Image (cartoon, rainbow, N blue to C red):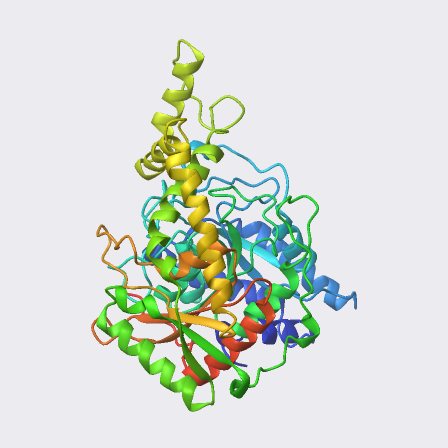
Length: 485
């Protein structure tokens, strides 16, 4: 039999359902790799091994008894530590929530469980998802499996590393400004963020509510499609949830490249993109042209405001969302206080990290009575202009194509450029679907890099089908795992 970790989710499901392999064998294969490599990679923060094995045994028992099982049929999945799992700790990698136990399942967790998926464990992340390196975690610093001296990206770095290193077949993360797609690019896997509102945010610890979306990290686009089929659904518990008309009966269709037009933003030349990344990007354009895809240039002048827009709006929403963490209702509570104000300030001051405090302060300043109109309101106006310009660009093309990132991962302790994720952030600002697909390895570092497709709102299935076509052309082998030293 083939090595379990070299099989797609779809193949694993088929093998388990047909009793060719057992769910417990699959789970043990991944637990073995976690025990072997995670001490070095630091991707997981918590694994309930006993519960994982018991759940796998229950799935195998159902199969032996001839009871129908669901679509995921005993496949383990890694979960980012800001998604609630009933009766388990959910900390968002912060000291502030170390003793918090989730009272209910997030909607996405319900859907995974209902599909007979097995929750493998919690993955590390930047504290409250604030960061792009997975170094602001209270627990540990996660390392890139392709070179453990380098960052994996963030904030969903733990989930990306778990999949990239073969410690999990797939994982869930959250994406606020590229937080799924950027680490996916750095780690050589597929990262997908849906259109805003398609996957429920109920039970997710919010960072910036108008940006956040649950996303998936997988080895192949086909695995992404499988998960999208499970997760995309209207949820009355989530006020931002949208009813879509996505036709999953077409999930295996392949779009005709000769009928596809790809738009390349004219503004790409305005950014300092590392030469290795630019070379691979230009090469990927030529490959798409070779199969009949039409390439056009699109003009989106408001790209120049993206970085500033993101900082102002995201931090303002952070300030609002973190206001609930007061040390009274739940979370860390400083024991020696004299009054309520003192309790708030001491509890937050002692339990929140530097990056979180910085964003709260900046966001509070943006929302102040003297600054609201000048900064926050103006940023929302420009955000609308950006969305309108992107909408006009889609009159000329089916998808907007760009590099995933402007630079390769830096060494632990070093800083990424502020605009590194500029092409990913646009999808969050406009509520559009985006997917990072691995393309090749850079000459300088020998580390993977991906390219990014962005679709129009609710055109998620067409986007996934385009990504599937590109994946075939790119020829990147996501089952070639890094050598971890």
